[in-house]
Image (cartoon, rainbow, N blue to C red; front, side):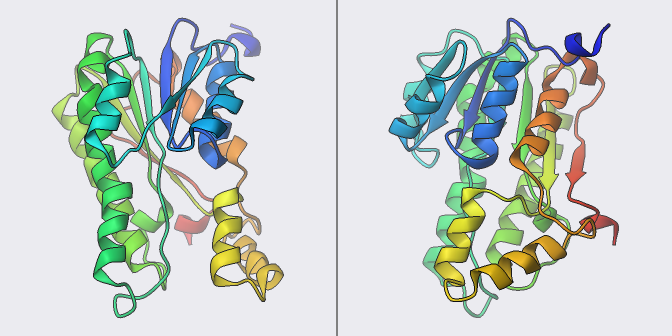
Length: 251
């Protein structure tokens, strides 16, 4: 097998939630590069359509991952699904004393309940083809990070869900969880704009430095790992939590 033939996804259909930007966008591009037909599922339909238009066999779908009807409307249009990437998520800054109940509930809804709703709705199609689910977790589900009470809580839940599903359906499908460190995306720049508008350069440098490697990750690096996990070469992998964090969890 030549390197060009490795990790091919020809004939497979993938759906990526939060697929129109950041890690989701890079994942859509990489899965398409591997030969998959990709459904860019995002609450921002315009952005999803713009990205899908650049992909061979790309399609856009409006999906609110917190809304059961929205999810089921997309599911009803799918004839086949081989790969599901649960990527959509939001962040929150604050200790337990500062996180308001409504903010905690919102994070649980977007980061945790959405994985349940989307996976449950699409599970019958994945089971038909012994599909692959990749959940996007975080180092925040594995280590404590100051001022990230709600976020750490939700990402810990994603890790636990991934392991449970892998055991429940060990012979019927594969379920793995990617755990990135801080990745330089529009998501991070939005965080800087919201919480550190007066000191963005300083805090951005701190975000780079907290990975032992000395830099944030790139969306394309996460996407490459996702492609491998979804490929036939990773057939023996399920229930795995895969760190890609510049050494953060090794410290």
